[in-house]
Length: 247
Image (cartoon, rainbow, N blue to C red; front, top):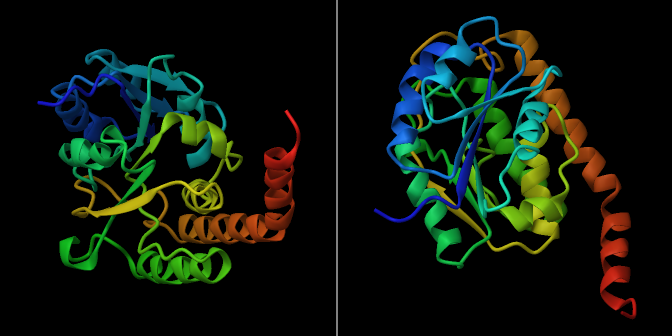
């Protein structure tokens, strides 16, 4: 098996103890450099379960998907070279992690997105609002930034130096689309790898499973996308100045 000790996986988690009981043992077999479970204030026994495995519990008092992911980034060890983001709910197959990371390990790409392609999705694994957003926002990105993604999937790997260069700002549900847009702007070598996707085995999604969650996600993704478009020229001009400035 390939050496995966330079890889850290960040798992945003809120009351996902039952899923973590299955997920963490699978990740333990891969001998990763770090497994960081980033907790927004779970009321179940998430912390106790994390302690049973070779994983690190990271507490973030601020609610929000991006806030949890960012908390994990702050705890990365110095020798980590690749960062994987993976949801805790077992909708994505964690055993695909080595495949997602291979293009970065081989130095052919900097950012790899696990694309939840229709023929690999379990029926009912994505709600209508999810499917609609997944169709709409990649079109918006294509029109605004010229790159054609097929998904906004949460299962992704990125070179650590590239993640640092992106300087993630979103702390809510706009996290994924911000990363994808900024990857285009920075000229990262991007690849999508088709991945399977299934219905979460336990309980409803906190986002797509509630009307409030759906609307909050739609609001934050739209806000993030719009904000990045409005400030795009400023970022590109700043980057150009840095490149042309005398050393």
